Length: 141
Image (cartoon, rainbow, N blue to C red):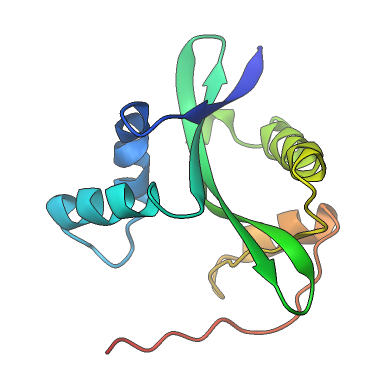
C-alpha cells in the first residue's frame, strides 16, 4: 500500500465530488454542491485526493487563514477515507502530512470541526493531539 496525498487543481477537483456527496448530511442537491465547491476553490481553500498507488481512496480539503487568537491556521475539512481503508493508519499518516505541510506554509495552528455525534472522530482527533475547545454553532438565514 503506497498512500499519497495530491493537491488538485480546479479542473481535477471534481473527482472528489462523489465523496462530498456521501458526506452530504444536509442533502444539498448535486448541482448546488458543485456550485458551492467551485466557489470554495476560488477562495482560501485547497482540495486534495488520497491515493493508494493510482487508486483514489479518499479526499480532504484545507482552508488557509489567519485568526486573531492563533495566527496562521489550517482547517482540514470533509476528510473522507473509503471504508475498506479505515483503521489502517491512513488517517494518522494524513494528519502527520497536514502538520508538515502546514509548517512549510508557516502555519502555527490546525483547527477542525466534527459533528457532535461523530464519537469515533472525537477519539481519533484526541489521539492525534487535538483538544476540544468549544462548540461550532450554525444558524441558517
